[in-house]
Length: 189
Ligand code: SF4
Image (cartoon, rainbow, N blue to C red):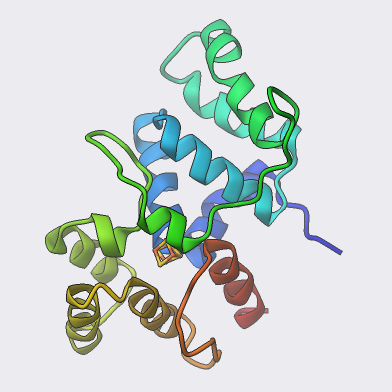
């Protein structure tokens, strides 16, 4: 049975179990009370994938966005996109969360929150992020080499291993943010 995730759980889950791409969008959203379209799409679908209901997704984004804009503006401009992710608007497709390949090949512009930190952050910012999460010098060097080789999935896999040393994951590394999350949940159960 799929777990139900509610908005009040998200801060802790982000800290403990989200992959860097999704934790980074989450932090951005909390800081700026807003994220642009790509972030809403990538993050909205990821949250749907981990068990946030449509109703709670609207509540989660609305509570954050209305700290900076009028509730009516949120209802007019942003509610639709969240409902769209859940297949309730437009083409009514029940979209799946994006895998790493799609995220790595996306092209975030200035001010965008989405993307794969291993690919899209410059090394200074990536290093800052990883150090904050407890990654030590030796592993940082290892990750830096993998990033230079453009082996982002493997770099993310190494990061996962640092976070969960006793939990085995596939040799190819991480290929889907929702797999990272699911494995992380399993590891810390
Ligand atoms: Fe996210 Fe995948 Fe990049 Fe890891 S490799 S940060 S899961 S996009």
